[in-house]
Image (cartoon, rainbow, N blue to C red; front, side, top):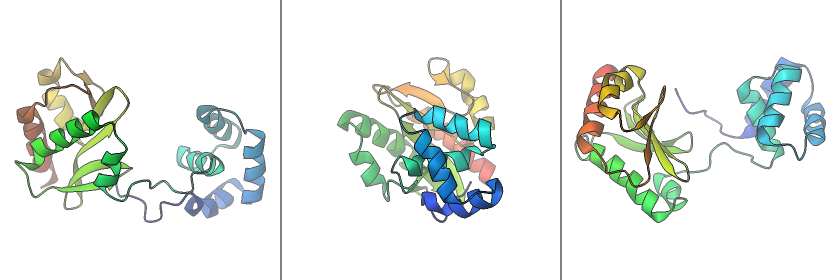
Length: 185
């Protein structure tokens, strides 16, 4: 998956006009009628009543809510500044556990989250919520291979959830990344 070249919400507007047959002025009027509704309700309305794709619905809803760009962070440092200090330290520790063994990995921001990349391949990603941290090895095969070693963690279809006070398991993280790097070759 590549990050979009133009992260602005408006970059979707020509495709929205073409695909759904109405000028943006029409869609802004639709959104004005939905003002005050929650995000999921607005998305559902566009998808169910007009056949919008998730990406197009998200672009229109978010633009209407004042978010003009999908890109919020230019650098990992900007991302870390938005986190509570203890959580930021934990995310940094998770990433350091990996980059200490694999210094060739590049720390980038993609999808507004820190990701480790090797060339054109994403190898490991992290995201945060208030009470937990999610990470992914960017491979369901890798995740399934290591699932038996993560019975005490919240393993989903594509992500692994850990509490903010998780004791970083360096060996597990490094082994997962080693397996993911092997897939990219």
